[in-house]
Length: 360
Image 1 (cartoon, one colour):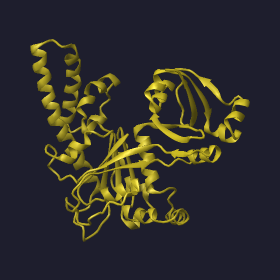
Image 2: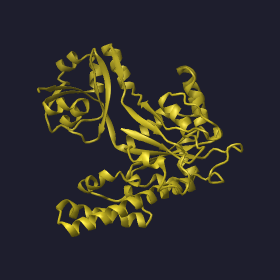
Image 3: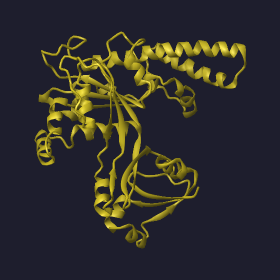
Image 4: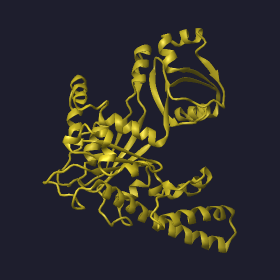
């Protein structure tokens, strides 16, 4: 899965990129950075650590997101924006919005107003999509006149519906499209169709108010919209926490009344936004987490590991994480009949520890 970090200039995107990936990209306080940053954000999961303690593997691998941190977007540049063009290749957008105040860093839109900035950026996405949808509609109508193509005729009403919504300033993600309709427009990578994670970058003094960030900054209605999640953090404070050793970081978070560091909060919010769960694999070679959409059947989950395993799927040997840990080993779980065999119709659950049997 790939997330794109988007925002207006000087909102703290690159600081957040550093927090999430553990990178150390230089941040110019006055917005002088000139390149796109690409990194990997690992999703911490204590279940994998617990399995590693049991199996003593050679390798531990956490589920992860790829992150793309693009240059700040200027208002009004939707059609020509290179940054927005890069967002078409991501699975979801993380819009970093400024709520901190710093007299030395002038906001590109004037006064600090997170609700305004979220609405403005949404309009930029809509305008960029509007141009794409209009061009596609014209091409479809021309193609249908020339030749009666069934696929074009089925795509036409979906594009028309998207265009009508965009003209009313409604993002495509808020349309109730069926799965087959989504497939017909997937190739256009509409920006406003992508799930949206709004990350409110708070003042240092608000670092402990992450739970109320949406309500405190006029974004409660935004958080209630489809395929949208709002979370808060103070990048400046969280950067300091990220530099501490584990014990000091935990004490700092406890003083602020925060349950987990920003990296974990943001990535768990991303999981929820995309409707993802994790199944686990465990053995002497590797203990690993695999991110899949909720509702995935066993063969398709196997495909997350390798297409050959999906193609040659025979069965899945499954034990719940809690049952495995309580048993102490796979052999003990098998003896207690907690390790079970599941077929092609089995829907994988979060925390399943699975060994796939296959033949190719």
